[in-house]
Image 1 (cartoon, rainbow, N blue to C red):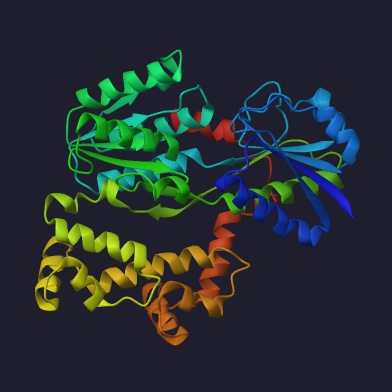
Image 2: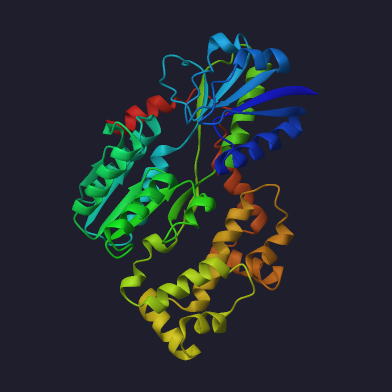
Length: 408
């Protein structure tokens, strides 16, 4: 069996999903995937030595966190696909690139925060200059300007070290006009914002509403309050890398392409739940539903969480959300069903039970009503087609070129 090497900067949540996507394609191509991890605090990898040892047919290199060891010199004539690397980097371009759609991510953040009807907005970028941070900032600011708002920007790369950066960020958060919606470039930055806001006594979501990117549960569910986040389809990104590499291995003339993988959805948690300003019991109920909807909870369980009789709970919930407790349960369960459907390995028959429905027939009926008559199978096929966009059919689309067009 032929071997393909996957170099990763760190074996964290998002890399695990990318590996799943790569392996899904590898099963069809009959490849063996060998994961090579470079720990952020460890020494540089001897890439040439690793390549000589494994004798692979190709390489996928995840460079988002920094992988300077990956170069033409160390890889020789091997076909390589760069994952989350700047397609405009002269050291690697022209080449084969797969990147998250930073423009779509920035737009999703703007749409989510605009829906909260806040008067002020801000962006906090990564602590080092990275093209994806800049692109997310530009897309976010463009949409806010379109709606008549300016965006305050914290330049995290201006600090000389992490300690001074945190101190500058703390002072910046304190000085922001409030209430303010903050787009954190990714979840670790969002977690920093929540921690510093707590130290300063800044109420979240009352004074700051914060949303991150990656929807990493190891981060988002452990912050206080829990962090809302934009999910990115990392599994699809891994699959596209393998698909692109396979084409390159089979076609020696195929040497330049740039494709993107998109947004998987938004998970709303406590950091953007402005309901806390209106009724803490309703905010508590919304969070209870988000965490437990996949279990067999019902309206009565939610009412008990609120500490109210069922009728009073229903009245309070609808007054502050505009819909019923039952509607909220259904919406959260449907969101999870859609996330599961995007995974082609997920058995459709098992989704109802995983999302809290008593039977598959109930889910199928509600799903068709919400999606214009589409069955779950038809919706999955359409979502897969939209996500792929036939990327390998016309691989000459350049992310760098699209990015320049978006800015002009």
